[in-house]
Image (cartoon, rainbow, N blue to C red; front, side, top):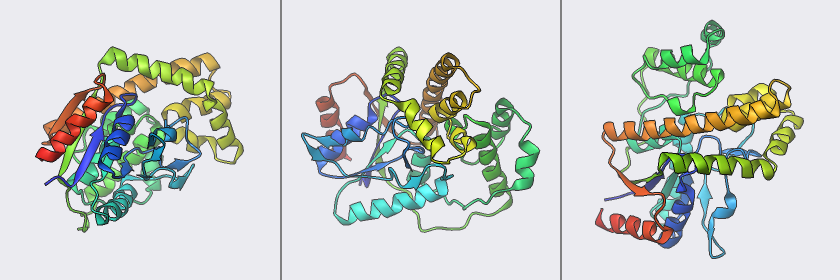
Length: 304
């Protein structure tokens, strides 16, 4: 029997609006699976769109958004435990939670019930990898067979951290946990490539108009080191490089737009990989009317 509804998809696919509509229809709550929306003050750059979490003026409760200060280095080990805290609270109300996001590693870790370790820093390893390029580090990551999130390794520091995690797992046995796998109905929002590219570009322009650059400037002025923001990748990487004089505005915008398109492609690669690893994903066309998508999800829930 279904214990969870999971709604996944690439950036700009409309998965959040669908999750909110489904949660509202089922009178339940949402658990976010986004690796950057957990940070306070990182709003426009992560696409939180918190005003979407309501239907006809009625709020839809959400979890695991704005739970850490910007600058913190969150990880999948912490996410797995934070997810279960939220999941158990929702299930105690006899509700069917909705997991929604685009961070494939987070989603897969909780659905599979992976046994994870809290991996400490390895200064010696980090120093040995410091001179390598992102491409070289990504090639190294491909040699590991355990879980790693290629879709999120868009900076050197993040790639080094992933290698650090894999090396730790190679040398240490996993500690059994009380985190079981979850039987979830998985819904994927499939958006045609050209439409996805247009929505990404349009949304990027809109966020700059809404003050996304000022958001990053405020974070820097609050004392967060530039390298910590660059660590988060995508919007925060390129805008920080611009604000610290390393990229012109035009360079920043063009490189960021390209990076987001590449990121969305990597997200879809991860989700297709989940299917190869045995997950059944029910795909919905992003252009379907929301009411039709919700009706289809509810039908699948009732049949599961």
